[in-house]
Image (cartoon, rainbow, N blue to C red; front, side):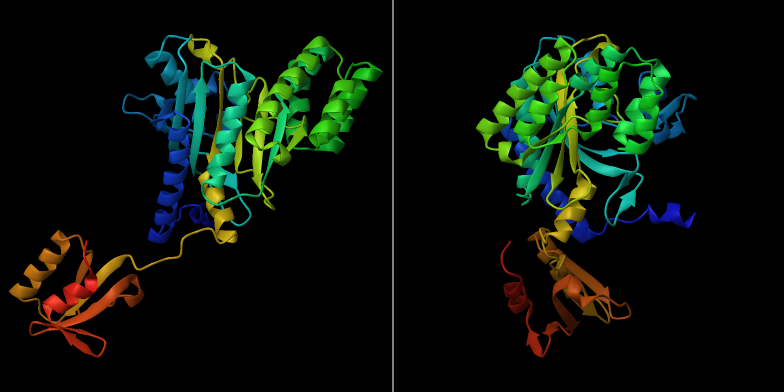
Length: 404
């Protein structure tokens, strides 16, 4: 129980101010790229995830609606967004660019923090099938981090299409393929090799499959290795598209931060082509993950290509704290006035200052306050205000507050 209760912590004012600043920065990036800012429903029908994406069931927080229906608190933004878009924007040829900042209800782990929900910001582009769209989505993701002061980052770029084309070649059963994906995602190479030894595949297929989770590194060398391992035309097609995405990143000035990784996938399960993750320099976990998911919209009767990403803002906050990128805490209130008995003049004066835009606390001397929370602390008595050793009139103290 103590472990569970640790996850339910209060967000304090200094954190809220920094989160507001971070949110403002990433929303500014969204708007510069022509995104409309939206909000998806907090609750979603259980069947939306349970039927189409059973791999998410373990992540779900379930509840019962007023009519007895089973609802889940969204463990993902992309699925309810695509479902809602299918209803509200039925034209599959319309280009849609959405940005959002929403709470997501699934577990996350950082270096020193963890929780059962987190604040996520992200972008989803629907209706654009081009590799240039993939490139712009990745640039937006990098700009999210740059907008809050993170310059050193690593972009891991891969393609699910290359992996899927290989799997098509192997003709594995559903359970076999599920295990292969699970071990690859967890980078469990020992179990992965043992599993591969049991599969009914050829020697060359075994060689390529075993190489896949090790297929990462700088762009030129890793791409050449991937080309040499191609067993069919679809694998080569996936690489050709990946080259075009990289060319976009090169023009945009981000290619020096890219390394290829053909071994990572996603437990979300809906990606069909380009996938990527972005790490802040020195971080052991990715802050951003995303990719192309061209088959998801068809589940909701309006087929259309799509690409997007999500940023875990709680993990971003942790990284920013370590790199001293958060704003220092400043007093949250302009003035605290301590009194024994509030007279009519004091009440009217406090109301007047608040109307003029100052944040003012009136507090009985019987209560204790933390003076550091206030820019000025004054003691009121007989129409005068004592600040430290000085005794000020109402007008003199108002001058100290400054104009608003």
